[in-house]
Image (cartoon, rainbow, N blue to C red; front, side):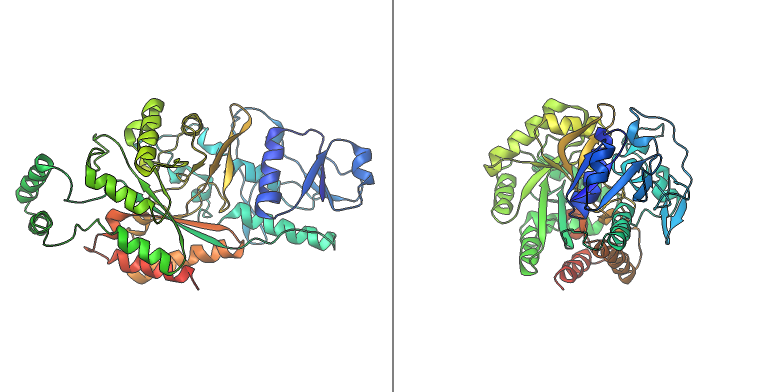
Amino acid sequence: MLLIYTHKITPRLTYVMRHIFVNILGVELDFTTKVEEFIKHTGPKITYTKQPLQNEFFIRSNELLFEQGINDIQLSISEWSGTPCFFPTGERSNLPFDIFAASFFLIARYEEYLPHVKDIHGRFSPKDSVAFQNGFLQKPVVDIWAYKLLAALKERFVDFEHKNSSYDYISVLDVATSHCYANRGIARGLVGLVMDIGTFQLKRVYDRIAVGLNRQKDPYNNFAELIALHKQYNVKCNFFFQFADYSKYDKNVSTNNIKFKSLIKYVADYVPVSLAASYSSFTNLELLKKEKANLEVVINRPVNNSKMRYNRVDVPETYRNLIAAEFTDDFTMGYTYELGFRAGTCTPFQFYDIPLEVKQPIKVHPFAIHDYALSKIKRDEVILQQVRKLMREVKEVNGTLIAMFTNELLGNKDEHDWMSIYAEIIKEQHV
């Protein structure tokens, strides 16, 4: 067991150290503020405070884990063996920076509490993040730091014990629009047809009529194909269905449509089905609860996983609402139009509520790949290269790579054959 001595045990300190040592590295640990207990301990141990006690493994602490609330922080980025880092510690420390404070800053999304300009949907922009601005957004630096720390500890303590983890991959299928033309009712169908004719989108006119006459399958109806693909290569997946009333940003098939309900039941027979919360429910807790309850009635089982529309996260309110609605896991932490690790980690973590200074009972599963980010890339091979690059980063730290795709884009063949690209990504997880 690893023992950590510090001058003060705080919720922040235990939270981030448990993520690094328990979640990432599989190390048992305990904490003490008693010098005598620390000195008597014969196993591996770390001093995390301002000054070392003796000649033990020492990491000089930054004040961040001992503060409360939000303070304006000026970061200075340096390097540790080729990996960006911040919160420098000085010469006496065994590490050149405070790995625990830096990890907390990223995982707890400290920077998202600081003043910033939100986009049109109320989202934190990746361009405002320290990771984007300093070129390490596509590296799971928290996990990389953790494994570098592990190497340093194993060098100091020959019998240092830890449990090995392994690479994992999860596909998140976001179904905000289950069908392009089918099951939308006569009125919506006619309006769509008139708009397509008015804008001279003749291919859409043809496809709309062909689908209406059952001459061809709706392009977004790729659910059976996706289920078969995941089963063939034994890849984990989770389908998130929007089950909400029609609004400006929520335009799925009506929740009263029998065929739509049958589709959700069909998918739920083979793979996990979760809630893609509506745009309207972002600040409406009662509506969020209603959507969850309605979907549970359809699939006849609890819905524990959530994903917010347009990946909207407003810390800490979004997670407080999700907890109040009794969700246990959320898959919204990531950027829609940028590849990479929004929270700096590829390991799921409990959400930390900074204003309340408490670890909340909801697990955050950060995604690194969104198909809208990939859609900015022009060539198929470059898309696959970017995915492989992120795969390598995650495999090197035995993390979890989560990729988010929409059935809409997978049904689109205008610029890329997205289903073929997706199939190639899934095949590579099986190697």
